[in-house]
View 1 (cartoon, helix red, strand yellow):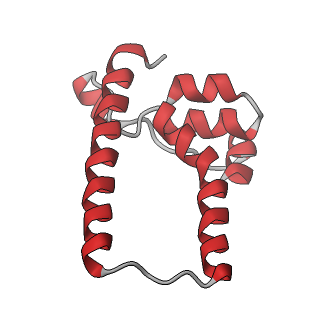
View 2 (spheres, helix red, strand yellow):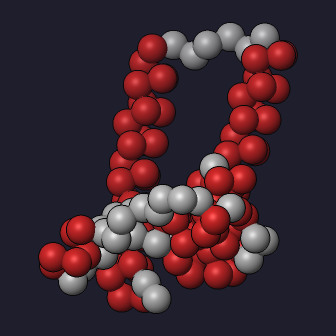
View 3 (cartoon, rainbow, N blue to C red):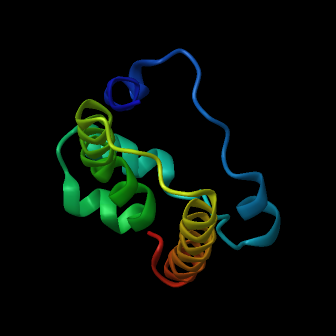
Length: 112
């Protein structure tokens, strides 16, 4: 994704403008994501976080998440019980949706 974002301006086709924002004047949950990715691809970290903080954080955290998962796999860690997995899944879903809501509030008030 970062490679595509780096050359985005030179691509023959671009993403259309956000229809939700055009019709309502309110940014959608993904507004600013393309600009954030372009900024990350060009090494402009601060600018990327200004456009879409959650997306930027997730993109930057994904190599760490991959490395931790690979480490667990290579160590041969035993899978936790279904009960523990379900508890983690519920906790993760609540956290994700809370972060999504906070990010959307940020976009509503501060998206350039």
